[in-house]
Amino acid sequence: MRGDIMNEIYTTVQGRVVATPESRVTRGGVPFTAFRLASTVRRPNPQSREYEDGPTNFFSVTAFRTLGANVGNSLKKGDPVVVYGRMRVNQWMRSDNIPATSVEIDAYCVGHDLTWGTTELVRVSRAQVDQTDRLADEAVQSTHAGFERELLAEDADSDPYVLREGNAPGATEPAPGQFAHRDDDAPAADEKTDQPRLTAV
Image (cartoon, rainbow, N blue to C red; front, side, top):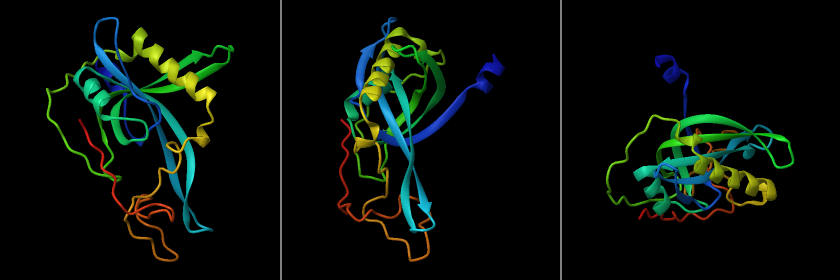
């Protein structure tokens, strides 16, 4: 039992919600909300002295019980979020018989990324943590499969919520010849300086 716990992988991912969260119920009657998360790496270019988008990684995130209900009531497509949870890699076969791999996260914590705005907290009942492999539920896998089909049908590069994870509005531009300490410290030229308000309900 101890070895199984040590072999589990827990991760924290910063990114944006790229699909409208879907709220459903497992076969055992447990409510959950699932959504698609895209995380784009920002790297400095030594030649241009500007930050550029790197590869985008996609994750299928599932939150259960109270956390799932709160996620369903709080997040929408395009929201910047930070997710912490147990990660697993799922290998499956596409409809055209081509092997595919997806990365899933059983979320323990989900919140707005306050680099991009402000939010308000409305207190509700505390979420319960379940250590079983909840991602294996048929309803959860069906929801994730739907996300994968949508991803295959769309060009991810054309989605404005995928790329330009970018820089925080209102931050200071790095001095010539230098890069900011974090890639979100310098605003892009076309970004507004007003902070958006992210309201949790």
